[in-house]
Image 1 (cartoon, rainbow, N blue to C red):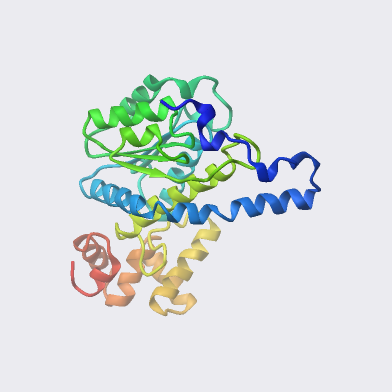
Image 2: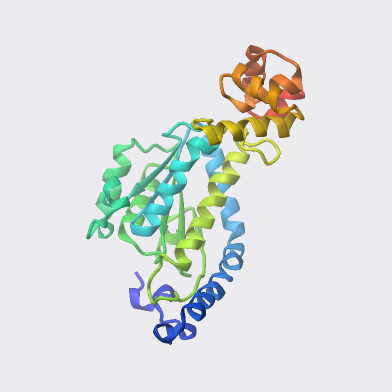
Length: 300
């Protein structure tokens, strides 16, 4: 395993050597300039991200789950992506799971030493009954965190698909994964503070993994989140607008359709576009695997 001092994410950044003597505006412009290269760094790894999405989509097709595992900032980013999937895509809480070293309390408070124990990852994955149908995505900016490596090793031992996401080249994580996603974010503005550029890069990758997977799983129609759960006033309004955008219905009709569909925008859209009642719309969606276009055009 590479010594941590040799990692790019641990190097001092010569462009920010005078950080403590900069004016606030100069400091912020410097940070912004450093951040500007993150999207390009992520773009270099798109072929590997494609492979990871394909693994996750295939896993979902056989009833498997997407499971993020990481420590510290990396773990928090996985949890963040996981908890946003149910309201955004209408997934069940156990379809996308985020595990963080030290347990749920580690999301808000550091749990010292948790990341150094690979056995904790085994225990956490055992606790959610990991199976060969699942995909484990381990996140570690350094690419060498024992908790993340332990998660990948355990996943592979059970036959689960495995993905490593790191922010250093030649990462140890990659050697334990079916797909290694390595984002070269370079030295941080604040030396070693991987909550900055590395954290942003990992968030971008998580965004891609979950969003692309859900699009390929029928959770999106056009660019509309048609499985959104309208659990508050803002989301009810959004759901009505989604129905209106997808069908051309006026606001009053869209609201009535949402009510008739028991608050499920996708069902409401199929009702309107196919000219059917709620029971038929549900049957069409079930037959199309949840894809609106196929349900409406009789391909299900």
